[in-house]
Image 1 (cartoon, rainbow, N blue to C red):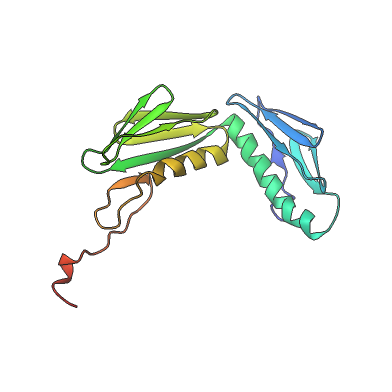
Image 2: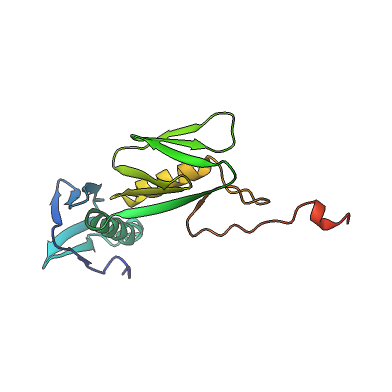
Length: 182
């Protein structure tokens, strides 16, 4: 039995859960999400909790048991609390600006890099070197943060670029610091 899969998922106040046609729909104050349920699993709502059970005991059912339970748990947390990622921009002259849903980044290129936020994801720029990404879908929020970070990853020699708020960039020693050893 999967240790993660057998844990019940508590349903917080203000969250509605409906299961029909092999899909689970979860609606809350932050939005609405849905997930298809594999045919080898059964999802039920009992005593204000969501339970995920296996119908069969084959390898595919065992593999999907914990995964589907984690996805449903993330959906419940997302529609009730939401998810947020924060990015920091490091570098002289590097900055971000938000115009509607379009994020414009000056990252030392000859042109500004523009990124349009997908539906369900909100981007905020509280100051020119900070980008906050929020939404109810954990996967989308993480994907948008990774895409924005990929425009200019942190340089290992100077540390310039876009990084996660709590990311630590270990700087490498440059050629000049080696002192002619060779």
